Amino acid sequence: MSFAASALRTTQQRAQAVCARVVPKRAYGAPADGPPPVDYPWMAPSEPSRWKSEHVVFTVLAGWAVGLSVAKAAFGGGKKEEKK
Image 1 (cartoon, helix red, strand yellow):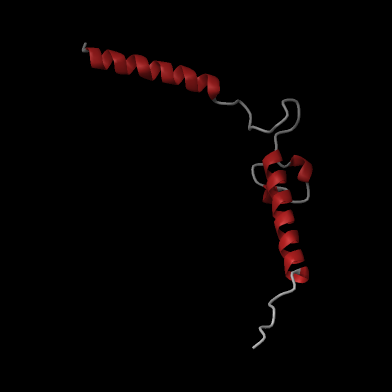
Image 2 (cartoon, rainbow, N blue to C red):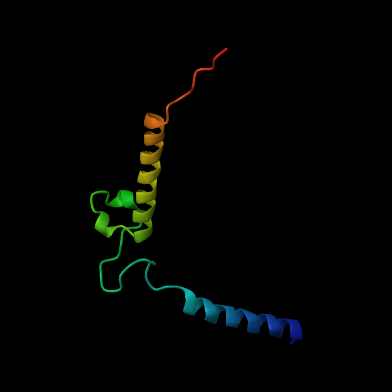
């Protein structure tokens, strides 16, 4: 067997061992003793407690973005008239 083939096999075995340790058993953001969260918020839109924490963060950030853009449009003053 050549050195290259032996090195490749060893590297693949190490990579598989590392991946087995790194891959989580549950979805990240899920409590270990609670029910698994839903994959997407639209699967349970009326139950935010079952959403993953990442979905809650995205929803809150989107709400702030909408609120700030509406406030800017309402209180921004709009375009100024140019004096000639």
